[in-house]
Length: 113
Ligand code: AMP
Ligand code: ZN
Image (tube, protein in one colour):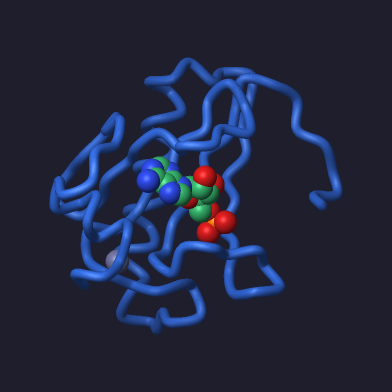
């Protein structure tokens, strides 16, 4: 989608600090980090949110989680980390291209705000 910020990052039209890439997933540094490590893991294919997924996306969702776990090892987050997916207005989603936040390098509080 040409008017989607994260699709434009996938296409290389908007710069980002790319830290991981495979056939279906891309990870890059969040522009406004909330932890010492704060990356976004996204599908290269446009998908607006988890609310737009069906059973046919199960493989892709698994790939995103597996990519996040692999990146966590690369980022040396052996003490743990948090994966967050915001969905829709109440979930706090501000970019309508599905993304996992991978946060680490500090202790995470609970419950989230
Ligand atoms: P969310 O609020 O869950 O939709 O998360 C969107 C995230 O995208 C926020 O954490 C933003 O800081 C991040 N973000 C927005 N624009 C960019 C950008 N150009 N490059 C990297 N991260 C971005
Ligand atoms: Zn998109």
